Image (cartoon, one colour):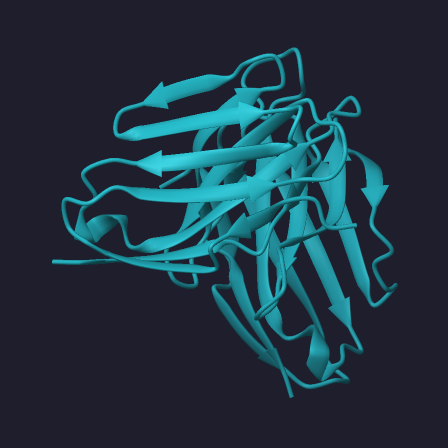
Amino acid sequence: SQQGEEDPQALSIQEGENATMNCSYKTSINNLQWYRQNSGRGLVHLILIRSNEREKHSGRLRVTLDTSKKSSSLLITASRAADTASYFCATDRNSGYSTLTFGKGTMLLVSP
Amino acid sequence: ETGVTQTPRHLVMGMTNKKSLKCEQHLGHNAMYWYKQSAKKPLELMFVYSLEERVENNSVPSRFSPECPNSSHLFLHLHTLQPEDSALYLCASSQLPGQGAEEQFFGPGTRLTVL
């Protein structure tokens, strides 16, 4: 069954603004990961947060995880036109190997 | 470049054709994956290979047949597909948990159209 559900489905902002995307999931996880996909291309890993972590930073990215609410958020600060892409959260139940369940994604459009 | 390559990048086939998709990873990973990405649907995990052994098959129809001859190569053999099988097929690889970072590295995908 589907795990991650991103919100919003689409987000349109101006360059320099911050973009926040949310993800909710249903069952227990080992870690949660965020990926980015440019139109019709492969996915690129952005950041991984483990179930015992609450916040993680990587460059302009900030991810939070609330396991009690089964939710995560991805914040992109000072957005750029090059950040335009679809963003997916994926939960990993880790049954001895990585098993990711993806949500439908948030399509982010950053206008110059 | 993520270190995962896929060929062909685009494929058009009839329902009676047999074709194969190829994936190769140059990262020294020991787990490989096939995903299907259809319009307006979440990315669906199809198959997982861990140490060249198939460990997961997510109720995928038998017209899709995976093969992992070694840890660097993964194939998806296709036969008698249906138009609804048209999608972007993505290959990924990763280390096993406990052997390094667990993020997956994706290839650029094969855009498959079934006529």
